[in-house]
Image 1 (cartoon, rainbow, N blue to C red):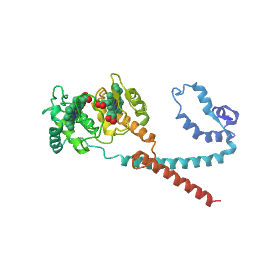
Image 2: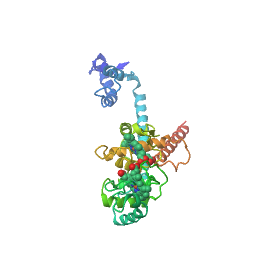
Image 3: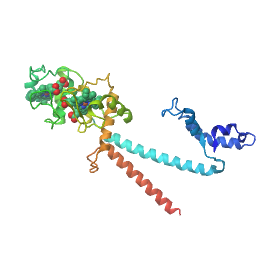
Image 4: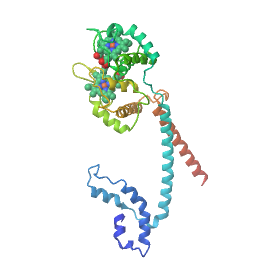
Amino acid sequence: MTHVEDSTDSSDDDPTTGKGLFVEEDFDVDADVELGFEPAVSATGADPSAVKAARSRKPAVTSKRNSRRGLRRRLGAGAVLIAALVTMGGTYAAFATAGAPAATDNAADVAAGRQLYQTSCITCHGANLQGVKDRAPALLGVGGASVYFQVSTGRMPASGQGADQKRKTAKFDEAQTKQLAAYVQSLGGGPDLPSGSLRAGDIARGGDLFRLNCASCHGTTFKGAPLSAGKVAPSLNQATDEQMYTAMLSGPESMPIFSDNALTPTQKREIINYVQTLKVSKDPGGNGIDRIGPVSEALVFFIAGVGAVMAAILWIGAKSE
Ligand code: HEC
Ligand code: HEC
């Protein structure tokens, strides 16, 4: 065993022999990489000096210089290949998830939404969104986000009296839902629909935020759970990106409102990214690639790419023998 530290102290490192210099030079590449990794505090809680000692353990190399060089070159080529494949998959996923809903604010949408409101909502929520006593609350200031959530999940229009509305088949299509949202938004203001891609950032950070803010009610596996007083936090398995975002903005029933101060727009997107990605990777069906979405499609591209590279390597190997 030769240690990095040892080689600088030992008699081998005599600059006049040139041998010590050679050893040092050969080690420099590895030593730099390791310095970049040195944590201020050991994340594992292990004794830092023990960790350091373990890291500095190196095989004797002076007689194996060429084979190490070759190995490094091959590892380097592998890393480039993997980076290229990951980029390929990532780019595909980015393109495939583009096309999220735009904020609703144009006059034609407002006018169409007003029509729909007057036929389907007015009896409970009133002609001026002021609410109707013993029927339904006011909608002034709830915002387009709340309308989108309630209507797209089929909770509204309510099938009967009472506060406990469950998810059901939506009565209105996506365009009509946004028209209703635009109408309510235009009269009362409030949190509007988000725009752009609703997934972003780091999945691991999204996981932390989910466990901190959502898991107590919806469970760590998104299955949902009973709450006190006979209420239930539903499963998140059917929720789309838009429904998750607007649920956070509007806080239906006993769910809290997560304003942009509580969870920034980026943090909301990280949570969505986490939940939706895990839902896809948990999918037990395993059939019908078109059904389970862009992330798994990117994965298939990735696996197919790796397969092609393996085939090429085997072929080249066979030719050169
Ligand atoms: C049969 C009566 C009824 C009808 C019809 C109805 N609602 Fe409601 N709505 C309610 C009740 C009751 C609540 C309160 C439910 C709750 O607290 O979960 C509510 C709540 C809502 C909320 C949530 C408000 C908030 O505080 O965030 C929105 C948004 C909403 N309704 C929109 C609509 C729209 C849009 C329509 C028409 C497409 C509609 N409702 C039709 C009874 C109704
Ligand atoms: C205090 C408990 C509680 C917390 C915390 C909570 N929720 Fe909810 N959530 C609920 C309840 C209750 C409902 C059902 C509301 C209804 O039916 O009107 C709900 C509904 C939802 C829905 C609609 C699901 C569907 O398919 O209709 C989504 C999406 C959602 N929550 C996401 C979240 C996210 C994301 C977080 C964390 C940022 C979160 N919730 C935190 C209680 C909670």
